[in-house]
Image 1 (tube, one colour):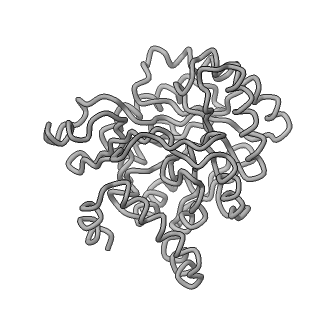
Image 2 (tube, rainbow, N blue to C red):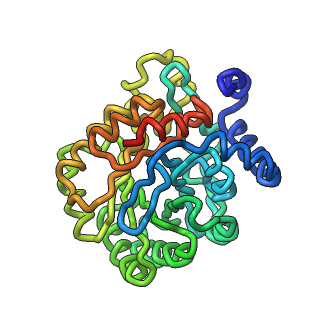
Length: 330
């Protein structure tokens, strides 16, 4: 069914289409019989995955960036996700970059995005989190500071976000490269004090372009700062991976991170290295480039414990969640 409406959706500006889907999910929230049927039809036949004290209903999650405002994660969970990550959120509202700022490159099954961490800020985000239903899914929150160049401010803001959301968060994610290594070190020291109270794990999300020869340094940094795992990876800036799109399409999209299928080989390479060299107790979530069950199972074979999708949800539709979850079932 989704493939029949996708051409219509793809005629609409990517961000406008996304916002319309969010609006529909808000309406769907009130259709109890429809929601019950959706859960029945899209519930994967897949075993749960246990890591530390977290039980993931299945191995497939939704990456941060889809539900930036934490306004529809409960509805999204109906489509079979074992875990959902919301955000990125900052203490104060961020409008982001001017539109248009999200572009599809269908020939490459890719997205180009330069949104600029647009989000409503902590207060609205916290209010939206109250819709969480405990025990139904694992909820992660991707957090960032409004002041990545100010060590003291970044420390205060990040520790405050960790504390503020801990009633609802099952884990937190911080993007590697969102601030300098020195400031991130100070931030993680500040978060550790809150972590000793609330006991919510923290993961580092690595960019697709992280040099392999820097991974030992990152692993050591993560271990020293009590990081609990990695998400590998985020978008790439490497335009050479766009081998099917016309040059005019790529130029029209302009600057921004590339996500979707072109990222898969970089992501798998990073996951494979982390699996071989990171401490075994660290969780590894494979992300970036997963479009079908083939890429998802390749991630698991490379050493990922779980996988996250985003572009697959856009290019393949909501039915892809169940297909990937069942393919990842051991």
